[in-house]
Length: 295
Image (tube, rainbow, N blue to C red; front, side):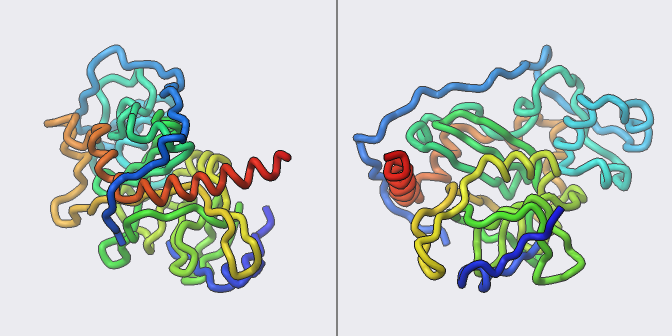
């Protein structure tokens, strides 16, 4: 795999790779079409989602060859196959029959996002992410975000440049795969990297490899008018909330309240509302660019 050359423009020369909120009333263009919310097909669990605590070594010895169980347990513990064995105890669903979206916090539908072509959301408190198209949840999974010392910035960002493989400018031993930058000057982006099961990054948004690949292909890059000017911004990305670093992993308490981390459509609407004007403005610019290209 070739390493990406990042010095393509003045923007990229300023880029570093590691690992602002504003309030305004919603004023979307009434002429924007409201798409029907079309959910992808999913298998619903046969039982209500609930959890129990298990000893990691014992559970892995009995279940490590079951890919369905492993995928759900890795997501539930915000970790990956390389790191789970280092954990003493893990949270485990009592039923594994459903698709992953049933076990993670994001709602399947958000009517407030029906006019938004694409958006990515990262929840700091639950260490999960989700992508939506016209209000429908498309993909979701675990993440490990910035540590207490190196917090991931929150607010609205737009995906810009990407590279299948690049090297961090903070540490040349950090090889970042499927990297997609969202804050160019500060070098913040999402990418595949080790997930120890808690916020541990140098401000970036770490993902399992399979999720990093999905987002790498799904999100849009910016379009530059010249080396100093962004003509079209990429996919809106909202990072929100705060992680409670003092009280342990919140998902380890799902055995007592399996819905404690759940986000409602109203929760997401509240998170996104301050940014809707800018999201819709940039979306119209991207649509106009596509129209011009199609002519």
